[in-house]
Image (tube, rainbow, N blue to C red):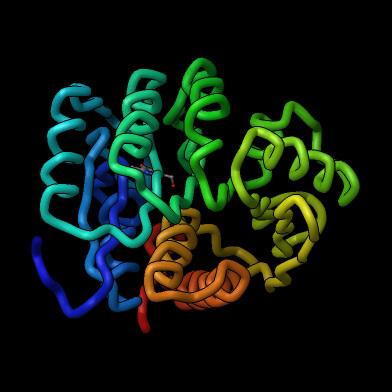
Length: 259
Ligand code: PXL
């Protein structure tokens, strides 16, 4: 076993050449939150602020051996998933999470990039619902992902609550629907754990919509959980952290991550 001074966490996600999202954003966020990040890379994207130019999914066998290598050597306190890119990869990751008994799993159900590139197809979404969501402590869909997962058009707080209930019903312990760029309830996120609703208020930052906000947010939650925080406090802290990073962003693409 490898000993580190800080708790060890894992991100299972895609690589983003621009480092605003994906594995790179997760590692930067982990570092700031004083946890040791390990990685299982699912897919490699070639992208910049204009578009995703190409992506390549790694073979399932290589994903499996990355996972094995990490689990043989590290004591993973919490893990998160980001871009999983195909039904085969979603299914393989679900099997590995069960096999290695990963606790404290945060799922960011990444489906589409800010530049409009599809990062998971319809069949992948179905596999995510049936096999991965049941293993999660928390799922963090944005508004559009919540509509796709629930099949509910969200145009009011009541509909958003209905969607949260439906997503939680797929088996995750809790769900947080993020409303960053929704037409209503701006900046306020809705939490549901089967017992209580909570609203996490935020201030939208006009004119700033950098990419990778969902990755940074879920990575910060993962880090806080690994450090022993409770879920609600972890979300609250991660939201403040992400909001500050958006405010400080000096381009509309890359956030400024600072402690
Ligand atoms: O922000 C979603 C996301 C996650 N992971 C990777 C990405 C993107 C968006 O572009 O490229 C690798």
